[in-house]
Length: 241
Ligand code: OAD
Image (cartoon, rainbow, N blue to C red; front, side, top):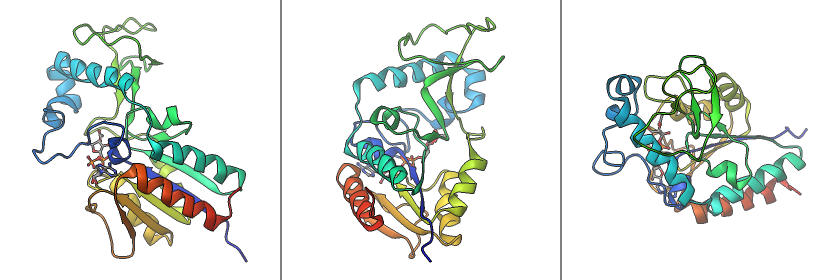
């Protein structure tokens, strides 16, 4: 009997590196010149909201000068083919850029999205990629609260969609971790969860991720070349239309 296939893909900063977006873990341990705790924690937002807002406004504006690369595009095409072929497919991304969406995918953005602003008082959310002034906060149009925040998940906050992701990872037949260093949990734990649940595990990245296991198939290289090749092979193997 043939087992129904279902695929979960987890992406990280490496998938967008070929679009020119810097990854997080550079050799100097800094993130775009900042310590993570100065710009990506709720405590930083409370302590110095101007600094945090300015940092995120610049990152939000930078989205306008990047475009999806062949890895993003290959994933979007693969998703369509998988669905047409009756194969389950879920794309989970840790990235807060909007490049998967612009390539045509509908990812579950577990760390939120730079393009979305959120009110901490009333929960209002809105998509905004037009207003980037780093020196002025934007008020909530729903309740009037003085400052919206970027709808990104900071350290010490709980990522989005965890129940859905864990259920899909635990039940998938094939798990792909693409462009992620495997150090930030809970996402870094999904590779082991998939493997221990009996899935085939495939890992693509420039460097060997922290959480790589001998049972995982590791494909080193740049995502823009390696990911389309990997997905082509998988589509052929699955006989996708
Ligand atoms: P990292 O910066 O930790 O890791 C990026 C990975 O991409 C590394 O394994 C690199 O080897 C690989 N890489 C770099 N360039 C590549 C390329 N051109 N092609 C393929 N791979 C490449 O990024 P993440 O693992 O995504 O969390 O980081 C996870 C989380 O840590 C982020 O979502 C963020 C951060 O703190 C939050 O903001 C909550």
